[in-house]
Length: 469
Image (cartoon, rainbow, N blue to C red; front, side, top):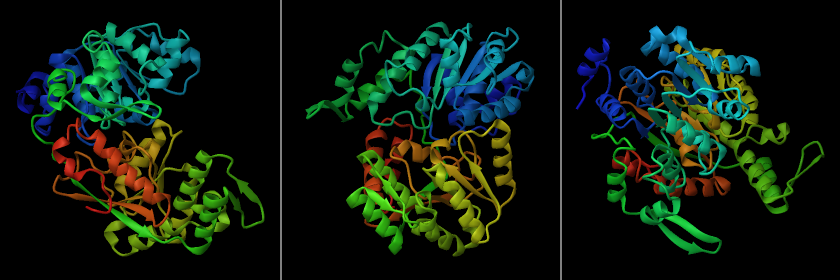
């Protein structure tokens, strides 16, 4: 098995700080060439991909990611590939002609781009080149459905590439069936039929609306079949433990009244006399969740909500809770949360949300890391590919339906750079007797169904089961 010392001698670098699973993963990716790297957040997937590529020397290299990861990849190229920084290009918010020039520049040995930009530019003829090596980072953000335009585009490019790597800390969301599009792209002959794959490796029943895919089966056979395509570390990866707890709260009267109005009548009488009507079930659910998170989203006169106030009280109980991270599923709540923090005496906040430039992201990350009096407020949907490892605890004031999205958010603080003997406290606000109860229950059940094939399956007892850990 490849060691850090051997890899360092081969590449002429000091790599003794690498964890044992990283050289092992590099050897796997080098050997099998087209693979899935499903390592949990904070375990150094980016260095693995770059050091593997440095070993393979397969240029040009294309890195596809989400917008907030552009800075992360550039930062790591600067660290591991400084000699190629002059030949690295980033496709960001440029006009079409500028993007076309970057895509087809023969001196561009490494191109980093948003996956959706790549899809658009290829579709409109702006990108006309293929790549010898391709990294699809956090692919779950843009590749979930078989048969989608992205699915067909990546399949086309994988056929032309010598190396093709899928990276994600949350590779499956609903169940094992989520692996098939990835496996088919990597090896369409071996994994040719979706339903044959599902029938063999998942429990399938006929339900009221047709065939329903339940939990996994034939796990050992699945692991044997995919041992080349999916990297699984030989030893458990040790990261700081996440201690999840609920923070139960009771809505205050005005908040509870507004909640019950929307729940029972699908409308809300605003404090100033206006009327807000929810016309369908999805809108009703969204409004209920917003009222649990921060009522001021719907009506500023309703205040910040019991959850926000409970978190502020919880922070006041101990000084070591005040360099923390707030997570919210609603971007509209962020300005109200900043105001609530200022009124409580917390003047320094940084915000992470969609639309940030690389420079904005870098400044926010550095500011949070250097100043222990700073609090980060993070949009859960945006919480990927940046690091807030100095912060503890994390507060979820509302959460996402998918366990993987919340896990990605937790991963901003649970990083390889932290001492593995540390523990990180995650508090999930639970407005008692509300939609929060159902969401937390569903998150526990959905997480159980997706953990069997994950690299941390040995730690299944630690899955999201807030309130009982």
